[in-house]
Image (tube, rainbow, N blue to C red):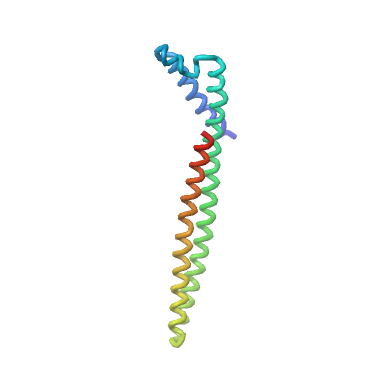
Length: 142
């Protein structure tokens, strides 16, 4: 994908610029750098660079899929809210015409409003846990 290629170019460009920077460091710092040996440089540049690039790419991809998932859930909630509003309006109309059943229908309106509140409250912990899971996975990969 073009995004993966641009991300790889960015990651490896950073590695190249870091390698150039290390060349200008004092000798005692150069000795502890990844450029001290050819094999450590290859590991630093190719292996760690590839892992870094893939972990960032996967995080971005998962985040985008997660956002699409959230938007679909929110659309479903909006549809559900509209249905609940229609139910509440129908209940209110029925209340005006039939005063004998006033108390029971008022309870139904309260139930509908409570259901809306509960559905909104239940989604926030899922969002927080999802973001925490992404952060934990990113840390494990790095």
